Length: 141
Image (cartoon, rainbow, N blue to C red; front, side, top):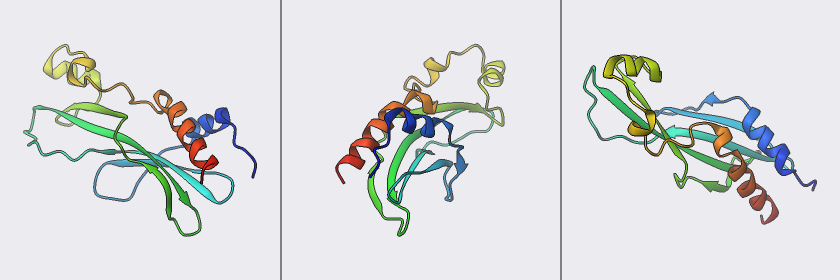
């Protein structure tokens, strides 16, 4: 087995395109082919919300990152991390989803005041952590 380099894996995690995952909730994934018939899936999905959404009011949607190592032949999960330790949120008002448009409607807001835990909204924020964990999984099957 050829050992995958950490920097190479980080590049693959960051550069592979996200695709919408099949399912009910807002979920996006990237599938990365690894050696020895393994596939790394890195994605994020909307966390279940129990609050009511009133039209015209600001809505904060929470997302969490997850990653899985699967066998490409039978799609069995070998290892996974769905612990929701990395999450982010987006603020929307009606159909306006980007931060500037939301600020136009509700006033000047700082995202960190709305989404205080929104520190990992870019894959680059967590790719090194993912790579380290996946390399551990691959070393200790």
